Structures are given as C-alpha cells and as structure tokens.
Length: 132
Image (tube, rainbow, N blue to C red; front, top):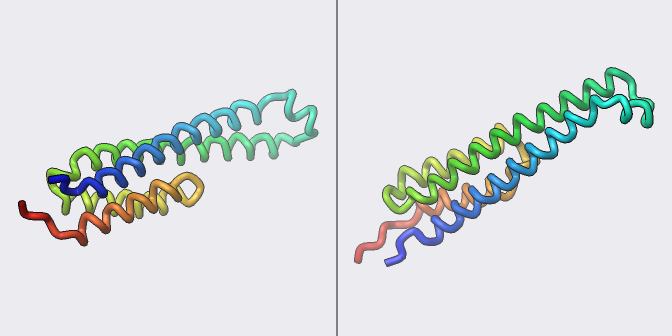
C-alpha cells in the first residue's frame, strides 16, 4: 500500500536540508565576499590587501560550494518524487548523490543531507518490493 514511504521521506528530508544548506551558504558566502573587500573593514581591523583578497577568495569558494549543494538538494527532491516509480534506479541515484556530495561539497554543508541520502539509497537497494 505505502511502498517506499520511508525512503521517500528520508530522501525528501535530505533534499530539503540540502536546499536550506545551499541557500544559507550562498547568503553567507556572498556576504563574506561583499564585506571583506570594503575599506571600512580593512581600516578598523588593519587588514592587509593580501588578507582582504584571501577573504574574497574564501567567500567565492563558499559561494561555489553552496551552489553545488543547492543543485544536489534539488536533485534529491526530484529523486524523492520519482523513487516510487523505479526504486532501484532512483535508489542508486540517491546513493550516488549522497556520496558524491561528500567529495564535492565536503562536510561543511553536506553532513545531514548526505547521511540521510545514503541511508535512503541503501534502503532502496536492500529492501525487496512488496507484492500486494
């Protein structure tokens, strides 16, 4: 009756937390990049030009990682919607998205969505289809 409900919910939660992490990272990386180049900050903290450029680079790097996190989160939401149609295929895709996120994004933004996606992917592959 409710086939793959647990996998659906886990993948959906992973996608939603991935989107939230991506949006939060985009905002924080953008703010870091924007404010680190201001002269007021460098005057009050006596930062050198190299320090300011390093902060701008770090803000841009966080921004790129956050965009990747957002894309993976949206992909996980799509996989959650489609997981009941073909559990094996979307289970593999969910597992791959969860594992690849750890390598591309790292532990900073991907710890909760990655663990949930990996668990949901393993459950999709390990559980037999119920016959009604």
